[in-house]
Image 1 (cartoon, rainbow, N blue to C red):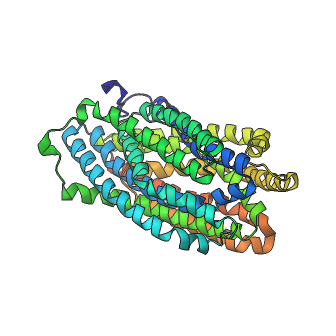
Image 2: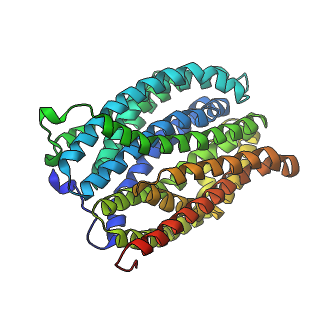
Image 3: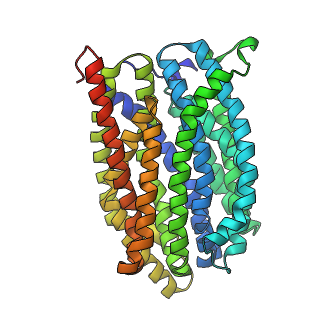
Length: 454
């Protein structure tokens, strides 16, 4: 299974980034099918009210999933750096200690998420008619936090070693399973919104098992018993890399929850329309997250190998690729977005038409500024890959300020449509911070590197 591991410290940067990112991109699309299929099945089978109940859980669900993803992403930075330096003994030690920390984190997150579910839903002004279904969905998903952690850390280990294909295969298998179970649990067994949640968790469990199976077969990760011991120094390094990424996600998602509370005050029809677009959001950014993972691995491996010159070259190519990709997606959304949104909505014809109009206006706004989101992922992930997780965390605070400020202020002057600008302004605010930090690093490299930074 050694052939799946990819060394990104030599070869054409553009080709390496694309070859690494494309499987992740396809995998992300399949991963988004989890929520998309849930939404379509719930919306079509159970109606607009159930769809609104699902949408009301989004930001709280993403908050705790984001904490898990943040730690997993932070831990894989050190893995990529050790792999790039060809320090395989230390790499095995980093992976073992990462797994220990993930077990502890997942248990703490499970307990915390279950405790805050009801208070936060009420704080978000969730309408009473959809509150029971929203709470039920969250209770089930939160019980599966260790499963979600298992998938994220296993996929992160593979990505740190340059393997983007195995997580893709895991997602394909899991997504097919999720679709079958969604239809079975919701349409055949009539389990309602709970069936969609259980289907998602079982699919994630399958994807985690698949990834761990292939990790076990990678030769350089086979460790002796004496290597599998807790190491305080390694754990401290991992937490220093992981907690800023997790905190960044917490800040971003808290901002999103505040936005959701404003959206909830506009009524069930607006919630349904807003939710439909947010379900497509995952597809809009799926390529961006893939380029982000690619740049974290690329920058981390090249920093470990001491190839500073290649990092900037890779950023330039990634920016060009991101611009072309985001432009293609934006055009597609303007042309076909309304048809895609219509899949999520059913029920009374008048309500559906109202919700669809809200959803499409929001989708067009996001599509118009999509490149700013893609640039955010490229630069933020590069900074994380070189070990700077603090500035990305600060950019998350900038996102919070812009998103919340826009959500609270703009509707006072522009009505409901003011909420559409919150996400775009958050992207722009983060870009300003991240680009400034990246330029600082480039100037620092020029001063400290004898070779020219090309």
